[in-house]
Length: 197
Image 1 (cartoon, rainbow, N blue to C red):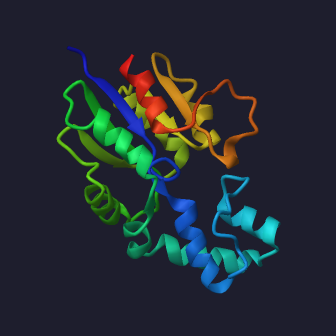
Image 2 (image 1 turned 45 degrees about the vertical axis):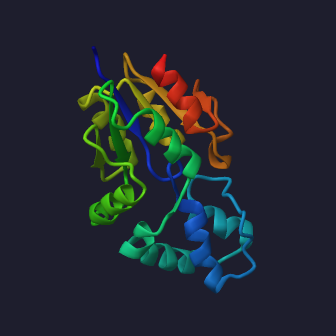
């Protein structure tokens, strides 16, 4: 039996980075709506443009969040996507799951703890952290992943070039406008259906 290797991005896929970040911004900017979703991948740029918030202040707040273990430990989950992984891929010897993230240096411990808290770690699952998003394609090649899913168009630009690999884009407001020939899914249950074919 051949094992299918699956690379899954964390933020925007299984962890709700945007919702968690907005809660922190609302402390200083209570006018921000709870259900706000950025139209751009860069949350800070979108906040500055859409709500006329000082870019320097946004960078200060984002920097504090990125350096905070508590922020990474307490990210809200995308529960339906977590359930799809746990119910279909984990503990099944037919799959190897790699959580592939470009979170800042120093976040491996809180990221692992978060994955354990949401029961996403198993004997067939592990975490790989890269310094830059652009490095994900190299890792996908190195681990010979058969499938990957991300919400970043920048990542997809590179992963679409990998032979014998199927890459998917989880549709989010910040990745709607593209000419890339992407295969989109609206949730991880749809992605898992492709993996299991």
